[in-house]
Amino acid sequence: MLGEKMNDKQISKKEERIRSMQILYMIDLVEANQIEAETYIGKTDFIEKIVNGVLENISPIDDVINKNLTNYSLKRLSYIDKAIIRIATYELLYTELSPTIIINEAVELSKKFSTIDDFDSKSFNNKLLDNVRISLGK
Image (cartoon, rainbow, N blue to C red; front, side, top):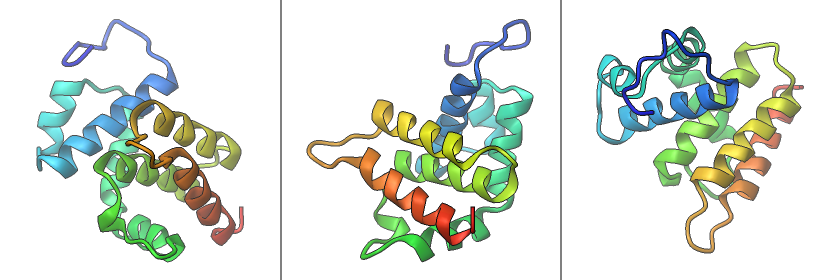
């Protein structure tokens, strides 16, 4: 699990997205550096690609997200939601993966990690990412 070496073990893309989210969460919340976060969580080539892709493109990613938020700001999003939405927006912008798969994966992460009290973050994130998808013409 946490801190576990992944060299000898194959993990699913879903698990790699979860770990990517955890790394981005740590970097954002406690201002851990990327190497510390990746060492603690563990990394694969896919995780490194996602995390590096988000961090290297954080300004354009956040711009796209901000343009698609209605009566809300990026600063108001929880750290978990920010990480999930940034990963999905990165994938929408910079990969050829199907938008349906990207958004479904993000919604699944939201269901598992993000619902707070009565706030239905999975629906909020789904709508936001659909708006992002439409704004990108996908």
